[in-house]
Length: 305
Image (cartoon, rainbow, N blue to C red; front, side):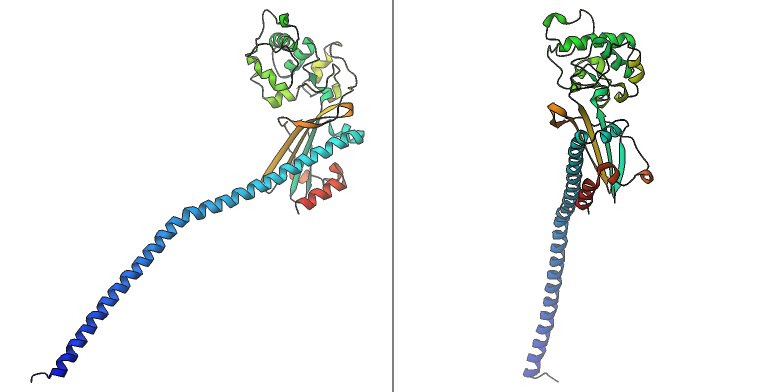
C-alpha cells in the first residue's frame, strides 16, 4: 500500500533528526577530547612552574633559617666580647678548652674563645719563636728554621734583609707588617696548612712578644718550654681573642667567627676562618643559662620560640 504524502514527510523528518543527533554527538565528543587535551597540556606546562615554586619556597625557608641562626651567632659573639672585659673569671674559664656547648629547647650552641696571649705574633716574635710555632705544626726543625727566617724578612722594613738562601714568597717580600695570618700562604712551604691550622698557632693581633703558656695550644706548650727564655712570658696590654659560635637547630646550622680586641684597643672585631669545635654528646649539653647568663638565654629562647 503506497504511503501517503504526510507519512513520507514524517519519515524524512525522522531520518533527518537521527542524522542530526549523530552529528551532534560526534561534535560533542570531539569537543570533550579537545578540552581534555587542553587540560593535559596546561597541566604539563604548569608542572615545572609548580615544582620551581615549591623549590623556591623551600630555598627561601632554608635561607631565612640560616640568616636567623647567623645573626644569633653574631649576637652571641658580641655578648661574649663584652663579658670578656666585665667578667674575668668567666673569661679565664672559657679560654682554657676547645669550646663549651649548651642547649635551649631544640637549639644547640657551641662557643669557643681563643686567647691570643697564647699565640705567636708574626709581627713581633723572633726567628726562634716563630720556628717553634712551625714545629708545633709538625714541620721539621731544619725547614722550620729556614721558613721562620724568611717570615721575619717578609715583615722587615729593610729591603736588603731577605736571606740569601731560604724559601721565597711567590709575590716577593712585603717589607711591611703582616695584616693576617693567611699571608703565610704566600710561601709554598706553608700551603700544606689550612688558614684554620695557622690561626691555632699564630696571630697578628696580640702586638706582644709575651706568650702565656697556659693559653697556648697544647702542641705548642712543650716546645715553648724548651726555648730557654727565647719566648718571654708575661701579660698582654692589648688582649685579643678569637670568638667562634656555632648554633644548630632542626638540621640547620650557622657559624660566626671573629677576632675582637679589648682594653684600650677595643674593637668590634673582624671576621676570620672558623676554628675546630670539640664535639659533645647531646645528652651532656647543659642549659645555656650557666654559660651565657639568664638574659642572653631568654633572648635566644624568645627569638626561636
